[in-house]
Amino acid sequence: MPGVGDRLWRHVPAGSRQIVAVYGDGESSPDGTLVLYEKHGARWERIRSWPSHNGKRGWTTDHHDGDERTPVGVFSLSDAGGLLEDPGAQLPYTQDEDAFVSPYEWDEAHWHDFDYVIAIDYNRLRGTRPDDPTRPLGKDKGGSIWLHLDHGDGTLGCVSVPERAMRFLLRRLDPQQKPVVVMGDRANLKAARDRY
Image 1: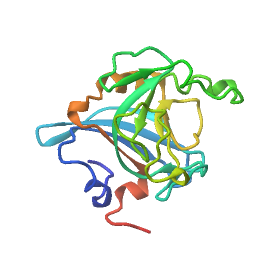
Image 2: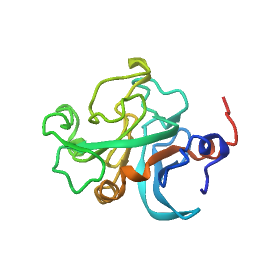
Image 3: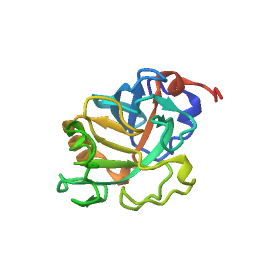
């Protein structure tokens, strides 16, 4: 797969046939590109791509609550939800008009961030709704890292994409295909071994 080195590639489960790759522009950049790949036979095929945003302060290999950086790594994608009705998701979907409301103090550009979300299984229990507060690695390591709707700039640690991308991903990602996200800045993604 283009731009993904051995260090992260060895964490992609052998049975995975769908990969959401997030290529961050730089270690301190909030900008990037999200690409969906699917495995057909022995070959990975690029399906679609969209512009994306990640943490306001970029990426980190040692994420902590409040650092405004997105964790680098390979994580499963197992649960979805949102403020809006299920658009035909294959992943288990939880609609909740109370749980997925943006905080009232956020500006208007953020009011629709959580209309649709896909939980990134970083420091969370797979098989639970995206807003489940359980943090297996402890609260200091952060959590609630999601794919969600884009608002035009960096996030607090999530990855955001346009609404058309979220709707497409929700309908396309299939739990039978063991989807994962491989994400990070381009230098960390292509590293052959740990840099730290």
